[in-house]
Length: 363
Ligand SMILES: Nc1ncnc2c1ncn2[C@@H]1O[C@H](COP(=O)(O)OP(=O)(O)OP(=O)(O)O)[C@@H](O)[C@H]1O
Ligand SMILES: [Mg+2]
Image (tube, rainbow, N blue to C red):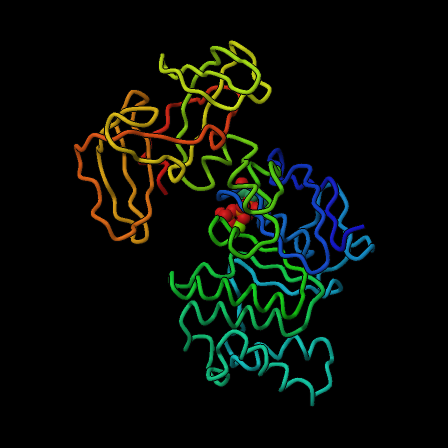
């Protein structure tokens, strides 16, 4: 049995199922992220674990104990809410100390524990300030310290870093992972930021419209997305609708609007309608006349560590990303070849509802 178990959890509001049949097992010490677009049920799921929202049906177990209907304060979990509510009339120190008082931790132990927690979030120098005297990011870190200080069996984090600037956010992601490893706390984090979910989680749980559609290690979610939605939501991707023309032992030929493309066969049969997904970084730009397809640079975008190109060709406009290795980028209008290794092509059955606009995919 896992440390934290959600079994067939559903939460309905009238006719809306905010969360449907969610089953999830989290091991002790594991860091799991719930990832998905706005409104997919992440916060509702977290609030049910926390005890602030009661499931309509299903069971939640913590360390073997059924806590489905247990009061929130009896669960003793550490929580950082999406809207992290600090006590405005209390200093940073007192805000963090509050949980220890509630837990009746002996007075002599409180100060060192609060100081240690503030140290972990780099706010030791702000202990005497009031929340109104802090930036949004600093308040968010106080909320984190307040959750960690009680040494909870499970830490629940709802977009804990959303108010930090890009640099601090990245630094805090590593910090958070470090803190979590050091303290060994089982953690469930909600985020709609895939880079954040990937960089710090052991496993990522992808949610769509109240349901879990994939639970996997970050690398697997990115490389082997199980639904078309995931391949679109997670990272950038080129989506190419086609039809299987021929299948032999190992390879299949897919016709993409009349252009034949070879891929690994998998379990395809002739006539299947498919959508091929190729990540932009897996497309290699070669010299004109080489590679699998001809193309021409339509646009280029500087991303700092990479160049993103829109390449016009027989399959429409494809995105390709190359590392910025310091050499001169390609010019718009320049003819190129496009190449890839067949094994990098992911195949989804069925056809997209609408043709993808690469600029919209580029988020
Ligand atoms: N108390 C409520 N009453 C009615 N509907 C609700 C309630 N709470 C949430 N919902 C609905 O349930 C769905 C899931 O909401 P939830 O807050 O879990 O989404 P989320 O994934 O956390 O989104 P976000 O990324 O925007 O925070 C939404 O459609 C929301 O409108
Ligand atoms: Mg939310």
